[in-house]
Image (cartoon, rainbow, N blue to C red):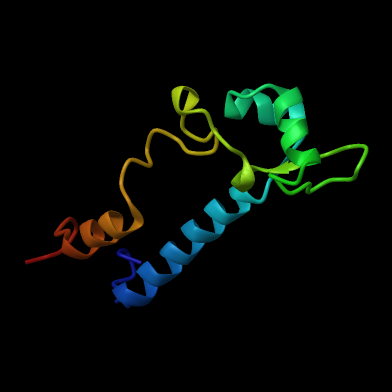
Length: 111
C-alpha cells in the first residue's frame, strides 16, 4: 500500500484486524480435547475431568463413550496456569492496545 501511495481507512482496517483476532481466539476456545490432552492443559487428572463430564459439571462435547471437552469449558488449576499453546510471545498487548498503537504511530508517515 505504501509503495502505491494508497490511502487506507484506518478504522475499517483495525475493525477487520480485531475481528480476525477475535475469530482466531474463538476458534481456539472451540477446539475439542480428549481427556488426556485436557488433563495436561488443565492440571487436573483425566479421571477427575471424566467425573466432571459424567456428572454434568462440564458439558460433554463428544460422545458418551468418548468424551471431549471444549477448550473454553476446561477448568484450570490456579498453580497450573500457562499461556495457550496458540498464543505466541508476540501477543503481549490487548487488541485495544494494538489498535491504539497503530493509529498513533508515525512510522512511515511523510512530514
